[in-house]
Image (tube, rainbow, N blue to C red; front, top):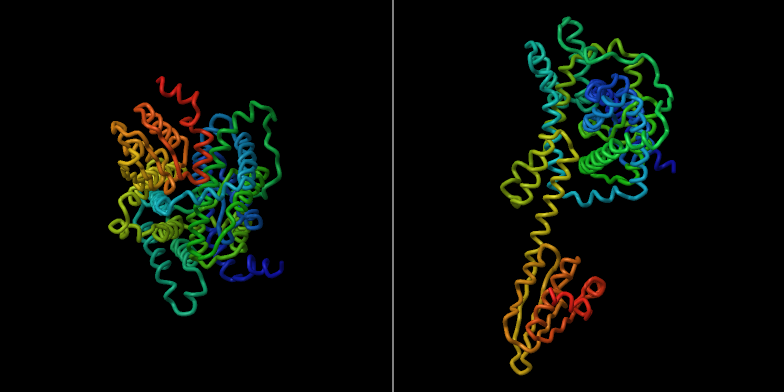
Length: 495
């Protein structure tokens, strides 16, 4: 127990504390921006980010991953807030949490194994593009000072780690934010700051129950939104966990993460915050700044509250250019540059899945749509590929006037047509043997194809014997097949 606590919390104290501070600084403008997207007061996003980060540090399944209010979730809330107001959003947030806990107990985190590598790569690349695009408003229609500050910030981020000793101790994004804030304040530069993003709250969040009628009508209003939020939240969290697993060469408990996200969202809803999920950009900032354990996530949430309530007069002075530089670093670090080189080497189907995932996510700004499109395409390509690995050969025995067909491979919806076309129904033979000892029947489409073949041969006057079915195939054929059920065959032959 003590060993587990030490590993999960205190095995990397300095790195986690510094990384958590960097993440907290980067969370502030994002939480405010996402609140504005959702159409709510900035404190709704800030309270949510604080609560979710602190709670997930204790109950989440992936140490070192950052969860807070996110843009993907904020986009789904716009209509609900516009039509029904903040109280219904808080109620929807609570229901989202409940649905995510249920998903955790149903072990839906395991569904991530159906997401192929090319979909994850496409998702990551799309997110990198979206993170970069989100910085463009801060870089358009501005004075040259902003460009100079952003360039200086990037120079600090990439060159500071090369400084002996100190470069390894302090995370360069933190040095970038502090340095540029000092320069902007000393020189009195008239550039956009965090304070221009929106008014910061000046009180601690308080426990409150959403002021909505507890009836079926309310449930019908919030349920569609809660379902969407729960799915997108879990999808983004599972994808982020996969990426952080790769970056840190560790494993995570995805079902625990589902439950943890649910508990965190319930906590956020009860403290006046909006629903959130794992953030890929912030998680990568955390990892690259040296954060590895739950302490970094907790520090990010706790320091965020300290920043907003205690250090607000300093916080509002941070130039947006410094945070833009950090997010551009995240964008560059997130993008899988290797995937560009791999376009020549990887199969065309893999490249199509990756590119389509990127295009759909960037076009819709909805990560769930992109992943869904990628998963469906990958499944279709896989079914098509496996469908080709099916072969039917035959041999004729003159003595017994028997044609023996040997089926090898997988018979299912994709290969069933090829299976039927492999038989010669016009050949005049007395006996037909269909040997399935090296084949496997997967679904009712395959069973229907076998029925069709047997019935067609019998129509031509041949005796048909089906042999060699393995146990799993025999079970599905016995249950759904009709070629050995006289009444059903008569009906089939009548058509």
